[in-house]
Image 1 (cartoon, helix red, strand yellow):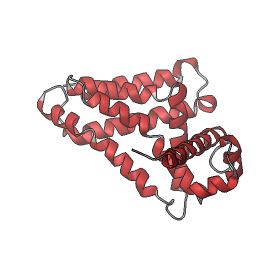
Image 2 (cartoon, one colour):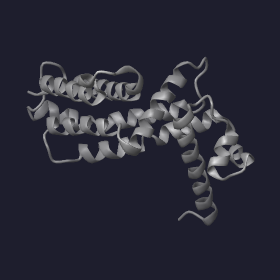
Image 3 (tube, rainbow, N blue to C red):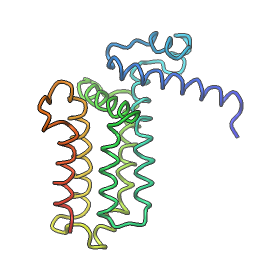
Image 4 (tube, rainbow, N blue to C red):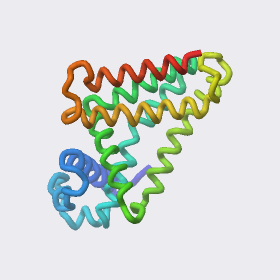
Length: 210
């Protein structure tokens, strides 16, 4: 059982991470200073630096935690008693739902984070933890992949693993992209993000269906 000191430390860490996530989502990663995060969290700047000596360490921690909801929902869906195809459809629905309400903040942050990380001349500190978490989430698909090879609900013209992983990665990237650019890129009512997301979902599922 954690001590009171450990509980207080966790609570303080959570407050700092949540404040950072809000600010990074509102302003972007480059324009937020540690003093801004301290003020939003109701903590001293020295306290924030004690928990996270570098801003990049805090950025990575926010990125890792942004995957929590995705992992929990993937676990729930994979464990359902349904065909591989039915569960795949539910996974795509989850990725689409991630663009709505509170989940949108996490998706928006992850998009900004991955862009930020890709332009770094050196790897972000602890980026390996983020990549490991992503791999762990993709590893959750193994039972679905095995079922897709056996239950006859998935198109067998392409091996189940590359087919399912490619569909999920492609749909996740696309839904994020059109949602985040909706205010500047899509003016025609007929091609709003929601329309495009549903069209791509149908295309992918129609191809994947046995």
